[in-house]
Amino acid sequence: MFTGLIECMGTIVSVQNKGTSISLGIRPDIPDFSVVPGGSVAVDGACLTVEESRGAVIYFAAVKETLDRTTLSSAVSGRRVNCERAMEVKSRFDGHMVLGHVDGVGIIEHDQDLGGSIMRTFRIPDNLVKFMPQKGSVAIDGISLTIASAEFNKISVSLIPATMEKTTMLKKKKQDIVNLECDVLARYLDNLLNYKTKLSDSGKPDNLLDNLERFGF
Image 1 (cartoon, one colour):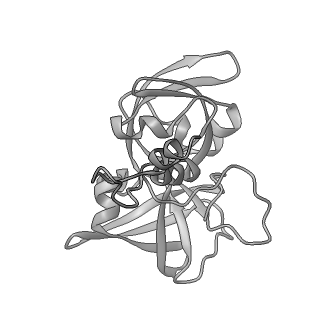
Image 2 (cartoon, one colour):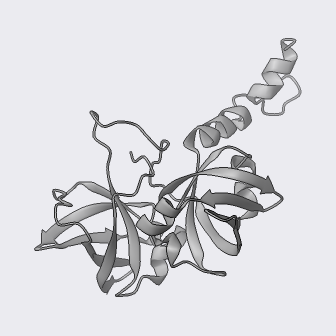
């Protein structure tokens, strides 16, 4: 599990195709970014497992499922990425609960300069709209952010100078793509409300809302 608070940026130094997967070599910006083989790192919000380290470079495998759902499918050497190691049990829990399981890809629509911060608007996939309410949480390229506004298939978030400077958001521009992870609590709640539990007397599957209505709630 992660918090969405980026520890550092890193640079992709190698990309090697391995059938339907790729091997990524990433050099974190900080020298003490140590992770043992088998450990987890969120790379632009996608949870990857460390295969090995060689000097300052950490190597990961990104499998087909990851490539199909994330911007890592277009990874190239020289690209800058956000990096966060998995949270330790004893750590303070800032940000919000981020699993590193990317739900889809969004597109930067435009920026609005608010004089001290940037309001950035993203176009999001239609199937993710219900998980992104105003004032809810979202991870964008692994960064924990609060949704300032949500309308149709667009969300806007406020980017303070610290976020811009310490993450890849400073270099992002209109039409760039980003990884999106919905708030896990919203995802589980939606599954609970819509899970088909059993057949009702009418022969149709019930869900939680059907059962609550039947019992007078």
